Length: 288
Image 1 (cartoon, rainbow, N blue to C red):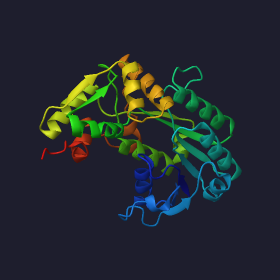
Image 2 (cartoon, rainbow, N blue to C red; image 1 turned 30 degrees about the horizontal axis):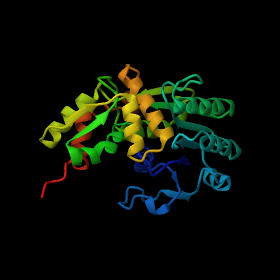
Image 3 (cartoon, helix red, strand yellow; image 1 turned 120 degrees about the vertical axis):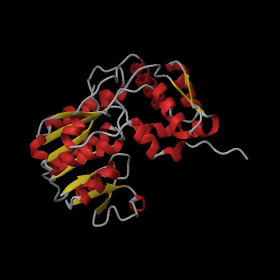
């Protein structure tokens, strides 16, 4: 049995679908069963309703599980609770979504958090595989309201390049490892799209997909942090995001890997393919 946590999120939903399509026994841990896909893609999937902060529900979800695909909103206490539950329920292997620069001395809080969880996982005695994606293309959806209203977006990543990746390809990599974990024991895979892109490239590709010019307005990290706070994002999240975007501007995300192809047998999706697949999410509101 394979358990996927965070099963209704960007990565988890597709990972469950892919595992299910291969007729593998899969269980999805969700907080709300009503959020499970109703289109038949999860037909036959076991649904476990639970909460990372309620350890009895974690233990129930882990019962009889061989492989855990650990996806969370990057809350260390929750991931550690899941790992401890996995140990208690005799789970054999953990596939964890992490960060490529998860270190104890990182200037970015979320990277230090991932390092803490990785250390706990290594000490647990469980076998594991780490998957470290570059920026997710699905994060561009957060800019969709501004693009619809103003025909542009703001960002503090300057002209920094990133190996931006479609979350569907991360899902495919996670499913491939979960289907045959013994072949990937102790490995770390870096997951990227096929090319390095900038947010200027995002604006160009959006303009092409939408048939009208989309403007990329550059901000400093401090300006961007303030804009995110004004937009309602919690200050710690806005601060962390601004740190990451500032690092991207300095070249932190300018790396590529062939690991998606190695794991899945297919090339990762390009930015152009992603935007064409989701063009209506960005289509500006028609003036009346």
